[in-house]
Amino acid sequence: MEREESKNNGGFPEPLGGAAVRLVRAEHDGCGAATRVRLPQVLDATAVRRVVCDGCHEPFDADQVLDVGVVHPPRANHARPRRLGAHEHAWRYVSAPLAAAMVVGALVLIQHLG
Image 1: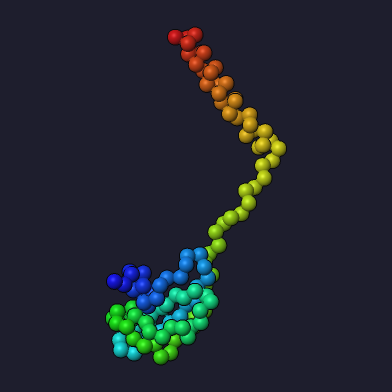
Image 2 (image 1 turned 120 degrees about the vertical axis):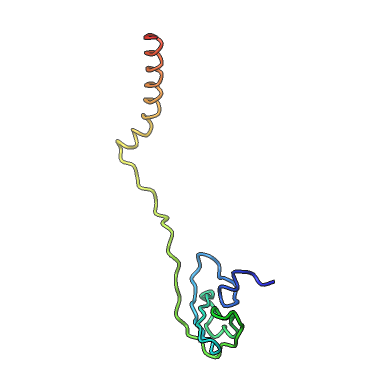
């Protein structure tokens, strides 16, 4: 049984996610539809010989293919976290004990008023 992802890529398995992809276009003379195939960057466009048409879903021999080019995936934003300033660094350590002290103070106040 053919995998669903292969039907959407001209019968070829999808390249690994996050890798550069070579786009190849093949036209089916039988129905006139164009099928786009995504290949790993290292493969040449001439590797595409038999394609499953996106239009009529019939396999056909791709006599001529057009190498559209290589597409690089968008880079994930792995920027280093920004450095905290001196006052921000101090606030980070003071805020938790300060919040705890405020909660205790509020509880003591509630007990004396009640």
